[in-house]
Image 1 (spheres, rainbow, N blue to C red):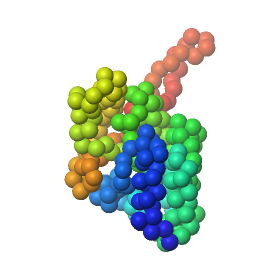
Image 2 (spheres, rainbow, N blue to C red):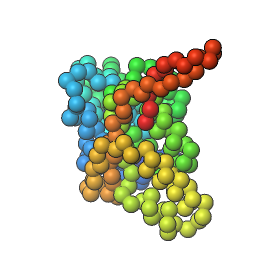
Image 3 (cartoon, rainbow, N blue to C red):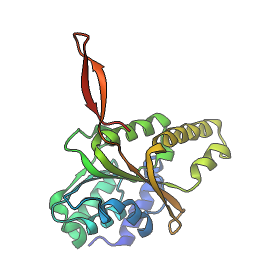
Length: 237
């Protein structure tokens, strides 16, 4: 069995090796993990779920998802860090909670931008450290989530409380402050559709979890080759 101290050591090591994509010195707390898994634990509909977790790290949120999954739910884990992928695969093969979902779980070691379109997901959970990314990257990832989610699907993601504002105003370095203002603009535009926000005080540091519901399929008018209007269907954010 993979012991928690072992996974914590891996997480700490990868934080120092790849801070840009890890983003935290410790894994998510149980309180934060349960909030991120909210729409698997408290599902909207009594039917099988297709679940996508992006940036699972060593799997603290994955564990909460696994405990709440039913026998006909499907889970995809997208993790760019090969060391975290190794830990996730070990947990799927050795820990009872993970073993019970192993035959319905895929671990994909690639960026979320490279994930091919497939059957849409009902629930998307993101552990990506958006505050470490360039604004254009954040916008691209959020747009990708919108394409991967089914209409009225749910997205849950987190950020550390107040960190964006702090970095955008008092952190030394003009480029860092400008980048954070850009990230803030992207997230604020996206969160106009936000349904709720949880404040998680029992985490290091305290965090906000944003829960967004994607809209119904939007019908837009485009022009065919012959110049005549035609209906097209797309998922918008």
